[in-house]
Amino acid sequence: MSMVIGTNVSSITAQRHLANSQVAMETSMERLASGKRINSAMDDAAGLGIAARMTAQVEGMNQGIRNANDGLSMVAVAEGALEEVSTMLLRLREIAVAGSSETYTTTDLASMDAEFNALVTEIERISDVTKFNGTAVAGGASTKAIQVGDASGDSITLTFKDMGKASIGAGADAALTMGTTAQTTPATDGANKEKFTFSLGTAVATGKVATYTVSGNEYRAAFRTDHTTTMSDLASLVGAGEGVTATSTSSTLVLEAKLAGGMLPRVGVLNTVTPNNSGSLNTAGVDTKANAVLALTILDKAIDDVTTYRGALGATASALQSSVSNLMARSESAAAAASQIMDADYATESANLAKAQVLQQAGTAMLAQANASGQSVLSLLK
Image 1 (tube, rainbow, N blue to C red):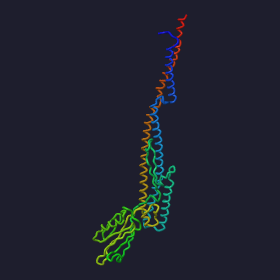
Image 2: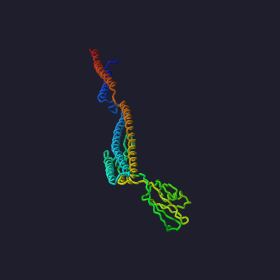
Image 3: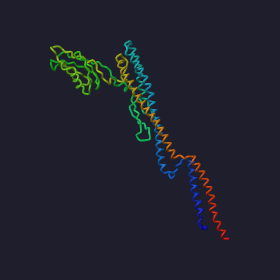
Image 4: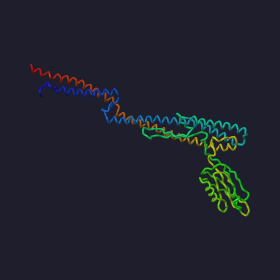
């Protein structure tokens, strides 16, 4: 090998290795200081992109957990109010049972009715004031979507209902005896017919059932949207042999029968009809025995309304609780995966730092040796 001083190849080689060990040492020191394996994109460009997506998922799921817990708090607020409403409804029913007995005087019923109305007013007040962050949870119908995940559309819907006095107990079925007006003289449209008009007093809803007694036989017919058609069906049930036809509006029934041998036929009596929307807790009272009896039916429906609502809220709360448990497990797994990519392994990095420091010291020594190797040329010049 030639002895030259213009180019010190050994020195250049030592410098290259020294620079590499310097970079390795600085990288290890940065990772140990930051706790991150990837501190810039040039450390691991692909890993940085994957870890960023995983981190976004973890943060989204953690927020979803907080959202679900907020939803559970909303349900808890509603449940607390409804528990008290249920207690008051039971007391109202107890009062109605008492008022249904004829052992009480008018004065007694008035006292009962005062307590009854006070409890109904309190139920209304509770439904109005029970809110969570401004959202009525017992005093209005609404739906709220609770975001319980990191992805769009990953939500659970909370459905709130109005538990006010005008909303619960509505649609309670109550048997209602109808008034009857019979024409005892031949009708103006023919001397061979007799009309019996029944006033329903209130419109009867589709699907409700009326019971009739015609010529000693009992018949039942369900109201449809077309009341007239239903009454015609009743005439078919009665039979042509009895010669009865029927027409109706939503609140009036007319049975028309033929006269036989100058005798008035026993067209009959409309015994009862079962209408709906007979009232709500808003219209209930116990000031009379009849109203107390009707209040029992309304209160049974009101109790069912509140119980059904509580059951629905409980089911949704269970779903929210399950989502919290699931999100916590998913967040844990995703965080662990992101940690494998992003976080520094201190055992590995401390070993790498020690190695780089030794290489730095050795490289510095070798560079000094390489720089001194040119001194041997001077011996040739003496």
